[in-house]
Image 1 (tube, rainbow, N blue to C red):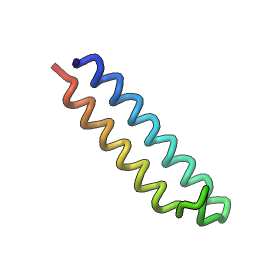
Image 2: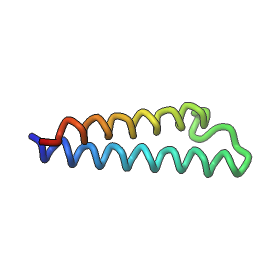
Image 3: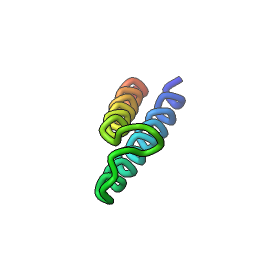
Length: 62
């Protein structure tokens, strides 16, 4: 179970980080929307993913 939580935490955190990077890079190009979503919403979703990843990593520690 610990190994599953550690792997899930890394994957979820990495996905959140990528979503944040995409939102930031798109905003720097001057756009406010991506795929019908506001970039602020995508940025908040990315941060939530990183926080969820951190919780999984903390729960997976011995």
